Amino acid sequence: MKIQNQIMAYCPYCNKHTLHNVKNYTAGTHRGLSVGTRRHERAIRGFVGSVEAKLHPKKLAKRQKVILTCTVCNKKVERVLGGRSKKKIEIKR
Image 1 (cartoon, rainbow, N blue to C red):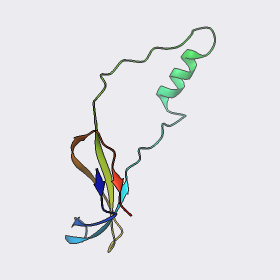
Image 2: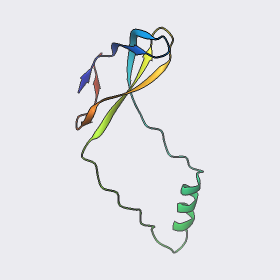
Image 3: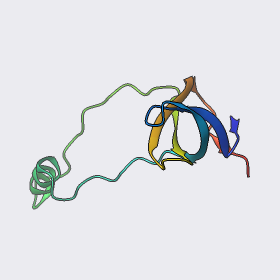
Image 4: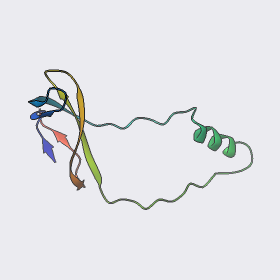
């Protein structure tokens, strides 16, 4: 799925349609000191072996998300493009 690098979109902060810069959404990383990570590390330490994870059903496609940055007020808004798409978002330069 191809999308322009600048689009006209509604800005809820400016309360009007303005030009927005488009950027790919990237998810954050896991926290190394969270309770679940520490519990998992403690369980696999020593002679216990590996700890099995819960099996979740695989989804066939992801919902593609982009970050829109308003050129007027520089606020950011997330937008999900369409439903589930098997193709990654490609931003045209």
